[in-house]
Length: 316
Image 1 (cartoon, rainbow, N blue to C red):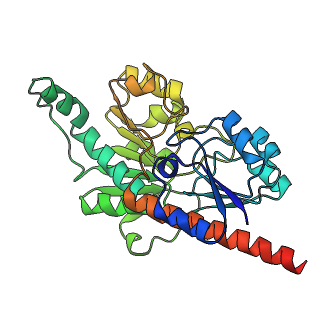
Image 2 (image 1 turned 60 degrees about the horizontal axis):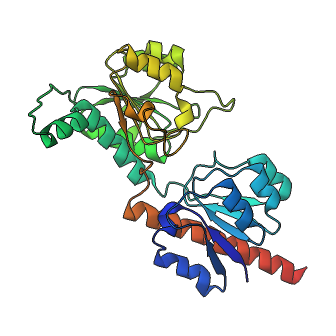
Image 3 (image 1 turned 30 degrees about the horizontal axis):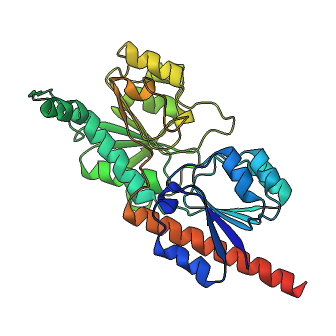
């Protein structure tokens, strides 16, 4: 029936059984290089005869969209769509579907893990012990800390619940100020300018601003406490990298813990190598449960859209 391109690295390295639902429905699966993020050239080569695309975080350029002669839907195995040229897709009538909140637990848990690692200097301690040393730096506790969460969607709310359970005071920034249910009594909404100088830990869980400019720029970093921890499991471009490096170099920020980089993998010797940076390799949603939920949702969206399209063509 339809040819479906599969490009997320977590799915091409070890294709899960859930993809069999697409084949059972009569569709043909096409994979990019196993375990590799596809380049623009590879996508252009693959996309011409593709009807549906189960996509990951790989950048999709207007040139790729222009080469997609038959594409009807891009189904993300996650919620982010910053990697997609939405205007070009809309012009071509190509639908975009997302697996909303499927990886929320995995990303939230990683954000908390990064906060703990920064508070207790775990990378430095582990490296020292491995080298035969016995480092014993004095850590800090989340109990009693002020934690600022920027973005109170599914991930931000999970981080808030965990931090509250650990004894933190939680402040939140979100322009939409969504209803928080049981969290409402314990989480205070504030503006970013108020949150930054008060928070001991700031964790980012939001999309890019509409104007595409970094949310945490030099001015924002200057408002933060000198011993603050900044955590980014959302989008690299939320933080202005040059201003961040300057803040880290002069000790105006204790630690930057991040799972995302503007270019992945980052270049050797750059931001990831800074002694005040804890870096992970975009693994927030890379857990068995998160990948399964996200893939199930992406497959559901593909099957529903392709079946609907086939029905409309049959009745036309």
